[in-house]
Length: 362
Image (cartoon, rainbow, N blue to C red):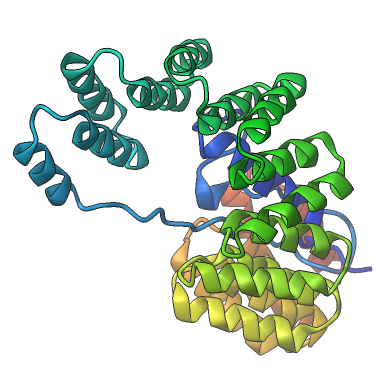
């Protein structure tokens, strides 16, 4: 019986993606790590090796030089400081963002957008109550602004307070029935609550109002991929066309083909990813997986896993599966070397120990 690692399933993909959107965007993180490192893994005693997922979106940013120039030309105006504060937020420079908010407050103490930005800073810092207080102050000054209600919904969502999340969204949609982000946040909330049907409906309402809403397209692609519905292909392709430099929709698409026994299409997508991001180790790893399990082409599998290892010398799963490819091709010495390497990276790894015992028995 084969003993090897298995692929990540779409349930793991959706978990990752929801928490990326809800927690990471607003920097309220618990057990989810930044971008590439946070895909869930699962292993079993089946015939397939493990795969992982990752996210690689890059937010468009105004150049710092242009923002500095705008402030220099309008030093007594609030807006340039807030624009630069938002820039610093995107760059995770929270202290610099806070400095610009303080400068804006010195110019105009009762400007609602300043408190909205301050709320974001607190939220990104994990100071949820301060974020709520700052946003409530903004709402007191600008009660008709639906976007402030949407921001409030986002905060409540990071707290998993779904009642207040939906109440804030209802307020936003009452003020602006076409508020795109309100529909999207509704989708995230329903998705986190496990109501896939309502999540899909909310994301589709989002896309109906903004056909280039990357996150809604991506989430729809993931949800339909889980259902093994080929609508996933169109949604993921559309998401990729909105952000050509983002590999995540393509990675999900490759996984969709892989999970639905279309290995050649999966390989094509992984190669497409590598044209965009040559160092994306997971695409190389998954190529190795497809060659190893679906095509039983062990030399190609070994080559792909080797390239993944070249990009990450501590990639234990790649060593294990390369060892397994060596084992299946009859090169027990190379297999043993890779299994032993796994044990240096993951002490007492159960799969590696079993593999070495298997080699000793044969």
